[in-house]
Figure 1: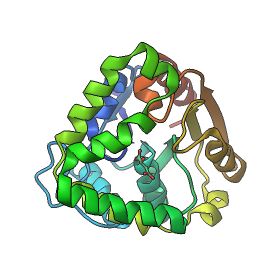
Figure 2: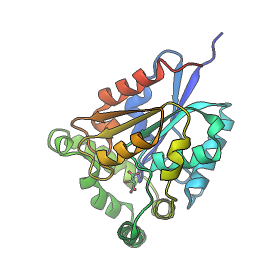
Figure 3: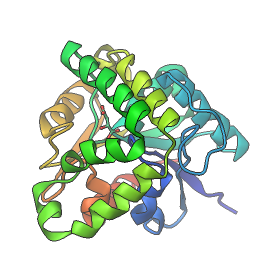
Figure 4: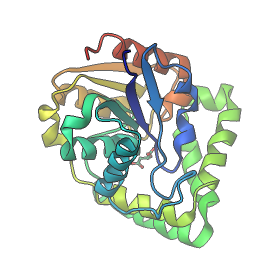
Length: 249
Ligand code: MLT
């Protein structure tokens, strides 16, 4: 009997594992998708953590608990930051990598200042204030025009997360290291995806990842913004499927 191979998908900020619902039924034969919540997010009862390394360790614990030795591991945006931290920590657990709507660079001073403001906002006004601030940037222009129901679904995920967990993740993102210098050392096949209308991590960030990672393939998704897997689910899932099928065991 051939055992299933695994894809582990890590969610964006300030969402939770339900982000990956559109991909749940798209696994090619022989592959199984797993989408854990980071500590403190979604259905997790753990206390939220304040570093990318601690988030990466939580993913390793999840994989260990499920008996997953190696997997194609990937994430969208913050999930991509954690994926890079995890590769730094345990490259032997990767069979391949997926980086969606994310970047290798660290925050600059302006971005760090915006993070500090967001921590204050979520502490004073709660998760819905973060939803108000982020929603206009999460979806591309076409989704905002043609799929207004997505915004409600995403708002539901954001307000379902505790303010303390959101603040912890902002701290983790603000303090994350620059991963640019490690890109050349990534030795597993890597799929890079990005919505063409992504204003948070624009296609230029995806192109930089593609330039830096030797065995990488870049797919730009027309009509998608930052949450490309939700906005253009069929195109996203097809690209992932086409990436997985030829991977050798
Ligand atoms: C995310 O979608 O995970 C965040 O927008 C990433 C970030 O703020 O850097």
